[in-house]
Length: 381
Image (cartoon, rainbow, N blue to C red; front, side):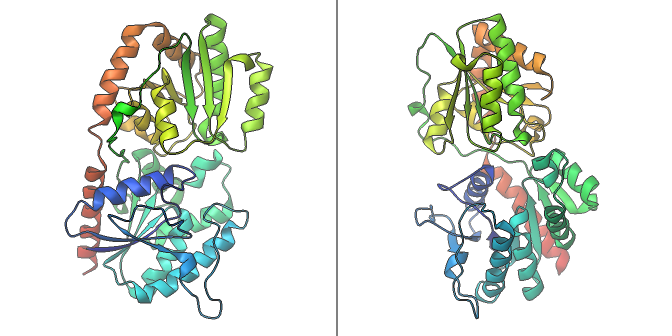
């Protein structure tokens, strides 16, 4: 089975969960003996792991009359232009890369997937990792919405990372429920788990790690921190990441008078993530709308008790994480307080969470994707 996949980022150069999910899924799928994956990204950096798939850089494929096109490898201000250029490269690849199925990850690559489908007649599946309804808290960009909707309309099948996202696709984008399925994300096994430990210290550490944007609910984390610190001392809060709400959060921390207990270490990647999560007493993801959310799984992998919002897709599959509504600051503060103050609660979440998450494997997610491939190809015959 030859799959031609279109993505936008791939480890170790990632800017969010999309690259992490792309890596985990393709690695899990590669364990199927007859699976052959070619993964296209705008700009490889040369240090990607290609032991289980082949990576093609769109920047290395000449387009007639234009030659090779430069790509930033990021999400630049001229993103729509880069999406158009990526589609132009895909049209060239349609003739060069024979495949059985086309798989496009997230809205940025849908035009490329559609182009290859139109030119080759091969079936197209799209993978919805998020929608603009998630990213914008409902203040949808009409251009992005149009690209997303066209991708869904043209796809032979739509895979979503959660039932939450599946419902959005059906209700907001008018898709036939029979065409839309859920394939929950998973987490890569940690081969070097013993390296990530919690150091003995006086203060407890509560961590938020992710993009500091309105989708992730950082202001609720700050407000909950203020409530916890009003009740007890000996707790420190970390907001790791970057985003357009960073300055606003620094100001809010100052307004609440908790700046001496709050830290902003910036964007983290690779082993930095496991290190800070392992050293934390609580990880919290208060997302307003989270299609899935891999970071809670990464926290549980290293034994960090986790609090997640009911409005996250991973809440559908996790039993040993504390679940609250993102807007319920009092419940969030109470959960934090209970974990840092009651050793038995910490110990239970530490042990059971790690055991649970180690059963959530990308190999199983890959089998579900393969089943979709087989069904789509059979249906098209």
